Length: 332
Ligand code: KDO
Image (cartoon, rainbow, N blue to C red; front, side, top):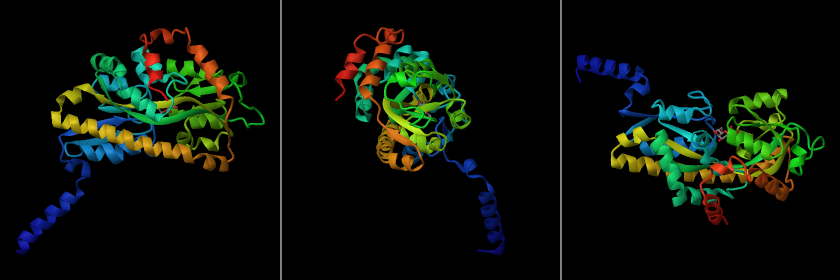
């Protein structure tokens, strides 16, 4: 190499290394994804570890955690308006547009993670998926497991033992801010209070709310054990999320790319589900070691009471005929 050539080569090398990696991206496509979950939430991890590498041949990803890209509950609207590619969406959020989705957000309906998958893959879901696609421009690719939600309070068990729904009377329980969530919180016997997920820790720390409900992995991920004293294992909702994807972006992809995106979503959901189940089954000792009492209340009393609140309610009136029976028949 002549010295002139070496100099040109060297300066080219130096200038290239100064260009931020984002500008060197090879892909014309960027999938943006918004979630109110943290970077360490298992659903986020599954997207980064499994979905992202699977689509990296044709799409880059830009992910906003902790509701930094869009506020919790506004993501579906953002996808619909063409401002966002993907989100980790709840049935409760979909119920804001299509009230019948509340059936998947109802207490004591889904029995476990496998039941969620059977329901999502059953033809009973087809009209729900079609409506979200046709009327909102949102494709539901796969179902993710968030876990069994329990009641997590600031009061010690000595101060308040939660055995039946009556024990939650007057308890100011933070629930996410949509109608389906509020209905569930009240159906548990508590006074549901809407609050965004990223404000929950502070509200518990200051006593603005008495408690919150989430699965054990979320209690650990968000360090709620630092500001609460008890968890009553009500298991009132085996909670799910959908990997929601822009229908407009989907339609712009080639059939091969569509297949890759679908497989990536299914693989990420399966990976996240196993990891989350593992966490859920192994976190109780750690939470107890942080001074939080964990115990099981009268589950039959909770189930009966919650189901009674839905029976004949305005919420249940939106459920298509026969779907609840079909969901139940897919259970254990
Ligand atoms: C929450 O706000 O409590 C909740 O658990 C509701 C879920 O549907 C989901 O949106 C989740 O928050 C966020 O992804 C944060 O983990």
